[in-house]
Image 1 (cartoon, rainbow, N blue to C red):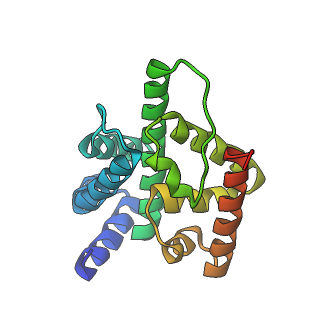
Image 2 (cartoon, helix red, strand yellow; image 1 turned 30 degrees about the vertical axis):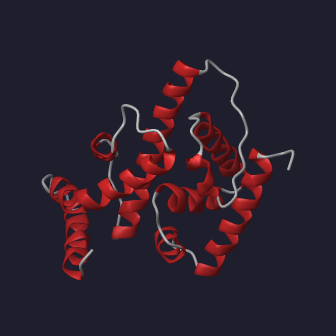
Amino acid sequence: MASNSLGEVTRLLEAIQSGDERAFDQLFNLVYDELRELARHRLRRAGSPGTLDSVAVVNEAYIKLLDTPNIHSKSRAQFFALASRAIRSILVDHARMKHRDKRGGGVRAVPIEAATAVFHEEHPESLIDLDNALTRLAEISGEASRVVECKVFGGLTIEEVAEVLEMPVIRVRRRWDYARAWLFKELYPTA
């Protein structure tokens, strides 16, 4: 994203904070292509497009974000953290529906070698497993769970995650390392 656009994102986020009702639509139009590319990437890695495509994911994310009361984003990275949470929710809901239709139960554990490997599976239950594990991880370490969410679903770098979560980079790296190890153990207990 060009530096002009970065400044415009910040300006629009400030306008949203001050109650400008048109600013959210303007912001969404500005970052639409970037969100669509992120969604396209996540869907491609999921291995099965099915009835869900990047346009549908971005449109659903728009609705989820629009329904979020008082979006408190101060930067592009914080906005994308919120968007990544919405995308996670959409993908997990879709995977649950697909799994329910296809399998009827019996979720299987998969390895979390570098958290993102789960998206290479062709089975929707792997994403459900990851979501369930992230929920359990959040009970132990909310920070570690948020780091995974930002990196895996939001596509943020360690530095962007540090900015979003307002943590030192070294702490984000430690939470990321801890989360990967914990998730691997949780999702692949016989390894």
